[in-house]
Amino acid sequence: MIEKSKPKLAATVILLRAMKPSGFEVFLTRRPEGMAFLGGMYCFPGGTVRKEDSSPGMLNRCYGMLPDQARKVAGGHFTPQKALGFWIAGIREVFEETGILLAVNKNGERIALGATIATKRAALLAQSLSFQALLESEDLFCDLSTLAYFSRWQTPSEQSLRFVTRFFLTALPDEQSPLSSSPEVVHSLWVAPDYALTLHAKKGLPMIFPTFAALRTLADFDSLESLFRGFQPTAPNG
Image 1 (cartoon, rainbow, N blue to C red):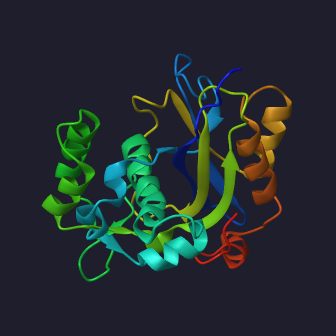
Image 2: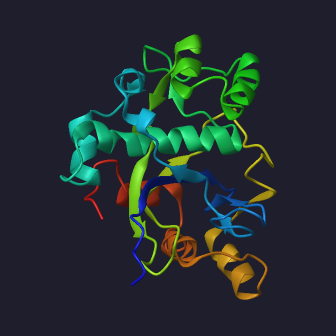
């Protein structure tokens, strides 16, 4: 008998921006072909929830949501601290993969990112600086209020590498733009959900089913305002 692997916890963030005169776009990234998971596929930024994401020091670098609130969304089988780790992991992964930092100062205000952030991000990717240390050095806090809970997906049991992933929505912060590529991203694009589905049907955007399903749901909304009315940080857990 083949022993089933225990799925890892993961977080994925769907970056969104408004279009003119109407509608919105999502940010899709393509993984390198050689990656063990989602190699060559288009997906949303995200990755594994790490132990340090729910450490006391990291929890002290959070703004906009309490651990008990996160537990009501993620599920009562998690401790409040571990539940909040989904939100923190999502913000960390978006920063690592795209350079977008969902953070505020101690007054809860968005600030312009300094030139040193790019250097510190490189140190983060090189594992010579932790995400907590980066935030502390800039006196910044993860803005968890920017993430709206969207959905939950679990990798089928027959696969060797498995994840239980919480998906979140967030609007692109003003005056920030995602990087076009990074060590985990070989190509990226902004695209309207319905057009992404059209490209996928024409074999132009390879993706797995959770990505397709997310785009299918998003295509039913005509604006970011209507979308965020339907999905809030306190939405029921999936």
